[in-house]
Length: 396
Image (tube, rainbow, N blue to C red; front, side, top):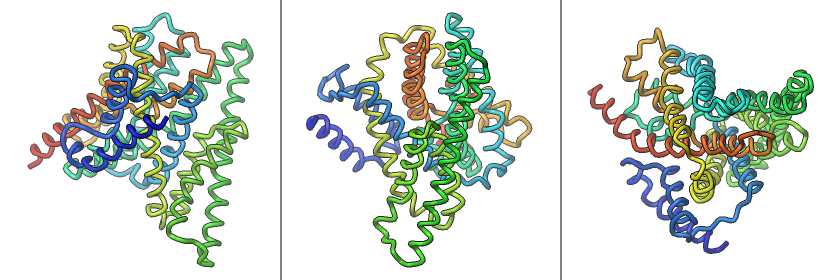
């Protein structure tokens, strides 16, 4: 355990010191930590040996996604949804559903042996994009503000939107296995969504009222106030899960409400939450490289590689081009927006989640997800800065 901790901490220390140098080139954090886990892990050098079973990996992934969902929702500026010719709204309301549909159709073509409901689950878990993997784009001032804000809002909200869709398909899967009425599936989804949303709203309101009460009496301190929103995110998630609802819905709804209630202070209060999410994300990416990729590698077939490539290209790009029809963005900018829809943390978490359900081909679905995320980390990480520079030079 201490050897694992020493290696992880040493790599984190070195990367933190030279991150600016790395990320100004062709590298980014998720790529570096995934490669560190892969190279130092049992697949190659065998120096990093994380002993995390399926339940431990699921807990790590779920907690990471809960914090990320809350932070992304709280950071989202909903006023931007209709800005820039409605770019974020178009991506979420037109591009996202079409991405799920096209992913499902490609799955039917490449994997005819897999039940359609399981292919719908696969298409859904690979639909959300990852803001961390697209950081070189969404935080680069060389990229037009409209494109940066559009991609940032999209990646901040689409994983939360995909959660209820994924829950619906998982509920239908259970209904299909149980041979019971479809109403059971609807009831399961409504229960998870309803309880999750109610918990998120109630706990966020309580936290806001307590924060106002303590603030008026000057009982707060800058140091401990940093833990208010991380604590709220975790209590929303855990309470909803314990109550039979969806913790992810609770975290997402709680984050959206916190964005409104804590409007004047949210950026200061969210710093610790974002740092906590970054640390958990680092651990998740290392474990993904050290354990998940070697475990899934033997399952990678030609069709899986082909699906991964199509998922990152046609399945994502074509719906984006359709959603942006009629806007003033030129073709290369539309292509740029379509390409930079990297798959990452949300897809990993969703893939780990589905292992607890009675899937006929669970290992294959996880292998497809792992292959897609692996390619995304490599291709999007390596292409971000060169394409951004090309666009910037073209404008100049």
